[in-house]
Length: 637
Ligand SMILES: [Zn+2]
Image 1 (cartoon, rainbow, N blue to C red):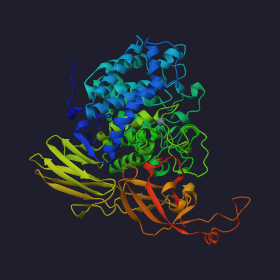
Image 2 (cartoon, protein in one colour):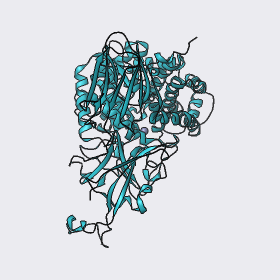
Image 3 (cartoon, rainbow, N blue to C red):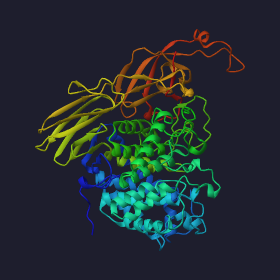
Image 4 (cartoon, rainbow, N blue to C red):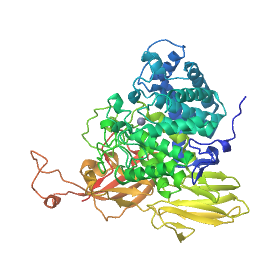
């Protein structure tokens, strides 16, 4: 008989062993409680709307019925994609973390009833993939580049680890162990030399090793990481780049191919490097991360600029209107950055997590928690054609034919608290700012802030050890001019204060929140001559319905140097701070046969029309009032 672990001991999704080569240690999930503010509100929408509605959607779309059929509880044909089970497992993972957060008994009951079906669907030898079991003539691993069988297994294992950590129940863990044992017996240097086309099993197997102590799982993860880049996909007649299989992971210098696959693989490799102490592998991953951040990431943190193959483009190939930036890629990006942060302790990775969470990730779910974006472009034109269910021109959708993103968002939001703070022998590091309580051993802190709307973060010590302890605050790279207790602190690093604290001691971090105009490297041709408005961690966007007199967003220009006005609007979009500044409406060009002209731009400036007030909202909140023109990058007047 298992009992529910106390909240303070529930480890989060990535929990390195004591022997791992990491500089920072995650805090158990329940030791950071986000109590109010933006992330609390998004978490409540997740709990009250996304997760319950998600279970309905999994019923409606046939994912759960596939498992029923495989379990012998129903009859019929499999529905949906070959990896349909993975959406169920991501939902189970979200339900588990959410149960740890709130103790909602319905979430436990729903998890266990789904788990029971999964257990019944599992084959004698541990294999499970309901669609393959039903549809593929029971022929396993026939087309690993596209069958996603390890990918599905990875999500099952991650859900099982979440379930045992959050609920103490081993039901799904027993399924995961039988599955992992089957994988270990089937694949590897002594067995079948092959990898799945879609990574995630690497991260999952390392976490199962962390949970169970079974070294074989870590070895298999290490094998899957090292087997890539040696021609396995080509042996199926497939071009290897899409599958992150062109170059061995430890020799790669950049990210390429399908963005979600690439970042999941990198995150799994970072887990392997941490547990095996492989400094060379970690260094290769840092090089790849640098390359991604330097030229393959949108200002929103979004990853993957091509619709073709949902893939990374060439360096600086970052179109705004055709940007793909799949929500799952932002989630995978956070997972990779989190592991790099744990390994290195470098603030830049926490900066990256902040950028991805507040922008590229959060844009993926509506404020109601019931509708989603799969693709997150940085511009929607007034006359965009809604040609595809993933197109932003179609607006947010309740679900997708390929529904990877919605349950991925759910598990990210329900485990968000695990990404706020860490510990070392010296003390506690606060990486993300939210109204929360943090408990780390003898040290208890209250964090009060209206972040991201206000830059003041007040930390009150509620309990402290009698010996000196270090508190470290991330000062984001954008926060030039930040102060801690009135003294200047360097941006882009941690501000550290080591001393003996007493109950009631306060520290106040002030991050400057003046809006700023950001430009892109000239090689990002798509946005040359444009700027974005950023404020704090948020990227802003112009959305049509906020603009004065209906001035078309497509025609707006910004006057650099014009003053900004910031107003917090509790009534707007669940409460946002809007930024206003001055711009112009470009006059429509004289009727012409083509958009090309020999008239120099300067001459056409004379045609620039009336001055208008530009009203910008946080990018994440766009398309909550219907799909309409939007742009992040604004041409300068
Ligand atoms: Zn997705």
